[in-house]
Length: 82
Picture 1 (spheres, rainbow, N blue to C red):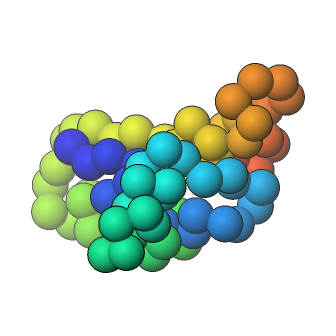
Picture 2 (spheres, rainbow, N blue to C red):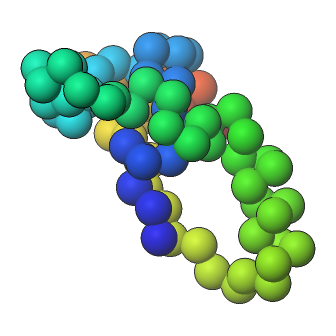
């Protein structure tokens, strides 16, 4: 299992807006999730590796601000495609 903050990265790409986690880590001036594991760009490679390892399940989350950047209103098509 993995969370969006740990895995996605790409925090300012394709219409995604900052999440509460992005704001929190920026306020602390420490490590952030701007890149993380870069799953947004490497998900196909990640799925291939999971297949090769014989995994039959993978629980993940997608960042809400990637799907609905303003918190309300229209769905971001690129977020939905991801």
